[in-house]
Length: 302
Picture 1 (cartoon, rainbow, N blue to C red):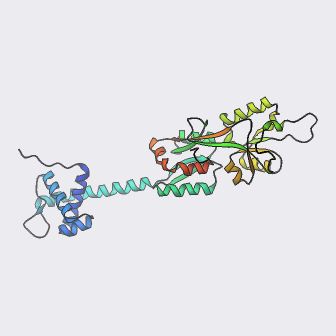
Picture 2 (tube, rainbow, N blue to C red; picture 1 turned 135 degrees about the vertical axis):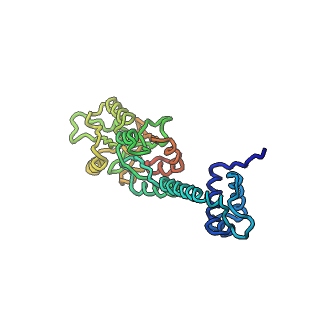
Picture 3 (spheres, rainbow, N blue to C red; picture 1 turned 30 degrees about the vertical axis):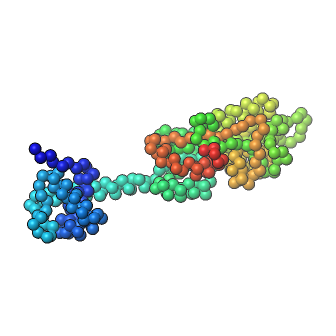
C-alpha cells in the first residue's frame, strides 16, 4: 500500500502560496521569485502538495507552468487559504503593536517615562502610561482597565524594585543623617513645630504606619507627621519652611532639594508588577532597568 506524504498546517499554507504564485505567473521561476523563495524550494513544496492532495496540479509535459483540470478546480480554494493566512499575519502584527496599558506612579517624570517608552519600542512594544496613586493602580489592574501595574508592596521578597527613602529639605541639613528625635518640640519653644511630610505615594501601611509609630515613640506631636494632598503641595510647603519631605534621593535631586538618610528607621518603597495576563509581565522583563530608573531605584535594587 502506498503511503501518502502528509504535510502539516504551516507547510500547507507555504505550499499553497507557492502553488498560487506559480499558477498566476505561469512560470516556476517567476512564481518562486514572487513568493520570495528559491525555485527548487517552490518545486518541492508544490510536489509535496500534489502528493498530499493525490493528483497533479501542473502539466509537466510543457515548458510553461500550465494547470491541470484538477489544478484549476482547487486553485480558488488555495487562493482563499493564502488570503486568509495573509490577513491573519496582518492582524497579528497590528495586535502586537497595540499599546500595552501600564499603570505607573503619578510622580514619575515625563522624561524618564519617555526613555522607558523608547526602550520598549526597541523590544517591539508600545506602552500607554496611566499615572495613578498606589490604591488606584491596584484597582486599575484588578478591573482590567490596564494590563499591567507597578503596585506598591512591602520591600521584602515580594518587591522586584526597592527604593530607599530619606528626607529632603530646602536648606541643606547640617548633619549627614537626620534623626527625627531632633524635631521634638521643647516646652516653651516659639514658632511652629517642624513637620515630616508624606507624599500620597507613601500613604501605604508599610511606610505610613511605621513612621507614625516612630513619631509616637519619640514623643513628637501628631501634627508633625502629615500626609500631603499632593506632591506639589508637599514641595511647596517644604520650600517655604524647615519641614522635611519623605522621598528618594533621585526624587530630591529632581526637585532640587537636599536629601539625607533617616537615622532611626529605614523606609523603603517596594514595587512589583501586577499583570492581568502573565505574558504581559514577562514582556516587560527586558525593561527592568529602565523601570528602575523611573522609580529612582538604585543600581542593584531591581
